[in-house]
Image (tube, rainbow, N blue to C red; front, side, top):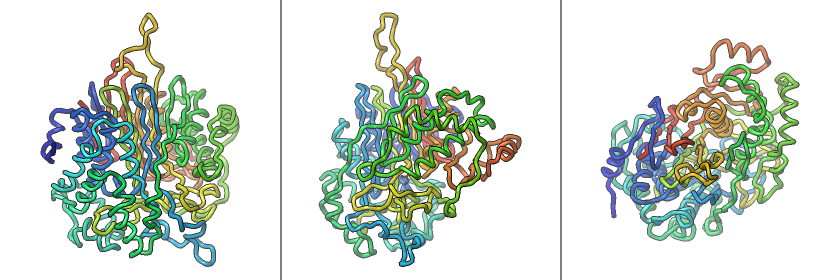
Amino acid sequence: MRCTTLQLLLASFVACSSSGQAFTPVAARHGMVVSSEAHASRAGIEILQSGGNAVDAAVAVGFALAVTHPAAGNIGGGGFMLIRMNNGETAFIDYREEAPATASRDMYLDPHGQVIPQASIVGAKAVGIPGTAAGLALAEKRYGKLGLGRVMLPAIVLAEDGFPVSYSLSQSLREKERLLSKFPETRHIFLRDGNPYQPGEIFRQPDLARTLKLVAREGPDVFYKGSIAQAIADTMRDYGGLITTEDLAQYEVKVRQPLVGRFRGYTILTAPPPSSGGIALIEMLNVLEPLDLGVPNSFHSIHLMAETMRRAYADRAAYGGDADFVSVPVAGLTSRSYAAKLRDEILSSKPEAPVTAGRPHAFESGETTHYSVVDAEGNAVANTYTLNGAYGSGVTVEGAGFLLNDEMDDFTAKPGTPNMFGLIQGEANVIAPHKRPLSSMTPTIVLREPTTDAAGNLGPHWASPLRLVLGSPGGGTIISTVLQVLLNVLVFNMDVREAVTAPRFHHQWMPDKLFLEPWGFSADTQQKLREAGYKLEMRGLIGECQAIAVAPETGWRFGAADPRGDGEAVGY
Ligand code: GLY
């Protein structure tokens, strides 16, 4: 069966949907998809309504975003998919990029030991071995019902027939014109050879459509061992990159178990290493659990949360890395006794003086993307994936139509120096062949206590313990964004729409600054924070959370696309 672009658009008529600008969450009885791009959300709903489950829909959304959201959606990058099936089975699909075999610890340093500017960010040498095609295919094989060919169909149609360019996509392509102009193939596809797309114009990607069809027909082997692998290796050779056909052939998705934490009666399923996100999230929730946080975004709550963030991010810098290569003290960092020690320190001290560190680079926008899916049976997927910076390394695979990541920048180029997100990078995260770079991506699923009837029987499936599915892009701000949205729902009793919309702040230890969204904090609160010793800095928008909440009493799904982006929540 071939669905047309029109059918994908029609999916929105039989479903209820809402862009990021709506003021109330989208409510649906059965299934919900929330992503950062409308066509991709609708592709997911179309799959659910065709009999697919949450994993089928999530895989469809992942491939569709690779077409419609080229800044972050990808097949040339990597990510994490957190799955929780309604029978309680969980999996954390780690399809993070990996350093090529010839990568080395000092590969981004000049002969004087200084970091070569942009070397880990722009161009072929910045590219890690991509994992997305393998990760999505494996998720589909293990947990999907419809098969890769069917769930990739919406993406193929969107690439082949094209889709109307939104205002925000046209703006984003213009903003990144300098990067995209550096590589002829990229300039040709994404800037139409110097005639950038206007809003409303149709963007067709025939090369990408061909690539997607090959993967749909032949499976991921064609990407890792076949003609696409050869095209990647050829592009690497032409542009001075390191990835070879051998690197691609040896790439493996790692299926891990999610990290599990508890917070005020809820179970938190989240990201283990090579992400730092889950550890930091659980560490922070443990610290905050017994504290009265008062009113959201008051001086009191910001102070307690910022001090907690500061300590968790300091630990991230010191201990974060790929646990398959270095020992990461996960149990210690997420233990309640350690949290109690941090809490005592926070309650007995004022914001400290800055600790010496290298001067961070200016922040880049964190171009990662997250989507959340819940189906009618209560299966849930939280998927965060990325090219790292917007449009990744800027390099497009010749003839294959997709951009490659610049994930190598998430490694430590030089211990103690910050990466593009201003995050200080430590020894545990130095580059080594086939190691995965430390991530902040934090796809998270929250479960509540199961409800029982008077006789003690578990409730029906719509009352399954699923409570919240969420995640965000934003580099280092991913973790603090997830923390704030989660607390907004579980502690401050906001609906999911309010929770993703509420103003956000961020502290990542170094630089020793409290970043605030400029629109959301009163002058009085800011003044009190300054008086308490915080160095405030206004920072555009923080994160872009796509979340689904499941109402405990009724099982209704409520979706909210973050108004900071251009996403859409669609349910039926
Ligand atoms: N590339 C962003 C992250 O993985 O944290």
